[in-house]
Amino acid sequence: MEKFLTQILKPKNINEIIGQSHLIGKDCLIRKMVETKQVFSLIFFGAPGIGKTSMANAISQQLNLKHDFFNPTIDSKAKLNQLLEDNIGKSTKYIIIIDEIHRMNKDKQDILLSYLEKGNLILFGTTTENPYFVINPAIRSRCHIVELKPISNEEMFISLKKICKKNEIKLNDTKIQMIVNNSLGDLRSAINLLDLIHKIYQNNEPDDKTFFKILPNTKIMGSSYGNEFYNLQSAFHKSLRGSDIDASIYYLARLIKIGDLQSIGRRMIAMAYEDIGLANPNLLSRIILAVNSAERLGFPEANQILATTVIEMCLSPKSNSGIKAIGLALKDIEENGTGTLDIPNHLKDAHYKSASKLGYGDYKYPHNYKNNWIEQDYLPKEIKNKKYYESGNNEIEIKMNKILEDRKK
Image (cartoon, rainbow, N blue to C red; front, side):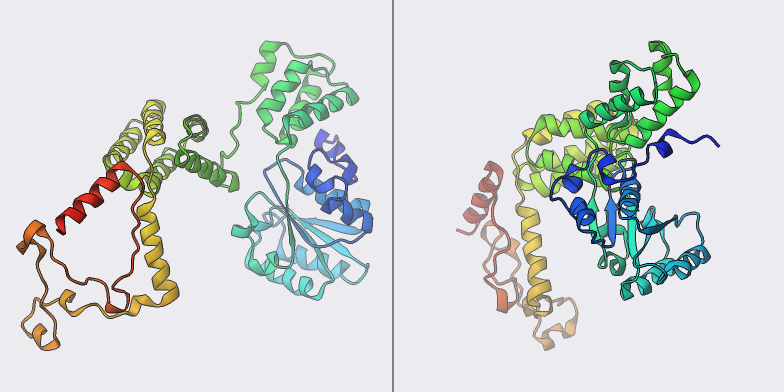
């Protein structure tokens, strides 16, 4: 049976791994592990196609350790039990490589835990999701987490060119670079495309028109609800907060290409109240109107609404006084137990006749006084001088605070 190019090129040692210099470079974790022959349970975390399983396999082979593969989406609990029963204790160290370990259900995880606890099993797990979110804490605490980085365009270009030369795949540098640009760090995807071209066109290089038809539509990093998607949303929010128009428009464009209009809208509204807030309160309602209009029109008409609004958000003055105030109040309640303090009697519900017998009442109605303000305590007596709100240094908040102070005169 003819093998795929990805199978033929699978690294047999860490020196054959492409990229990941932060792990396999001189004195780095994986290289030192191999050099000292000290192996530990690891969770390999990173985007699809960048070599997580290949690295796990290369370490196992280079150390000449018995290892097997297990895929929780297709392999049964019985197979897992059989692998462990057949191998644990029969060699010094046994490695089980589990692809997409976050898909492993609880009963299979429980089987692993008992062996990991005894120290007679080495687990190499791979996942495209953030392990701190998706992996059982009991397993995670018994493993070291290793993050693989996307392969750079330069590293991928050099590697693909070598692969083409070694396997007599006829592609010029321009076409190789286009494959690199299209793959966005996914080496497996790039090699699979080379394999397809090699097997279908054999010794003939496809012309430009044919090549464009073969080349898939450009992918977008983050086009799934995995870790990269949330990183993309985070970068969008932080660029808006930092008033960087170009970065905000760039991340907006990436989110638009993914096509999740609701996520864009939610993030814009969240940012508006968290980071613009009282510095520009009139903008808040316009952002909600813009988001609703964009959702009503859909793509591509929504693009100009979103772009215009994002630029206005960047240009707007910023204030986080609202979220700071509620954050301090929540912290006070959670850490200092202020959530159980007695409400002042004059603020308690006194609409019923017997309320006075409990001492409720004597509330001073502000509208009955000059400037609709009268001094009285509102916080519980234990924290009556507590300050949660600190005015932002912007024209609108300064003006509003002055109006409030003037009302008290």
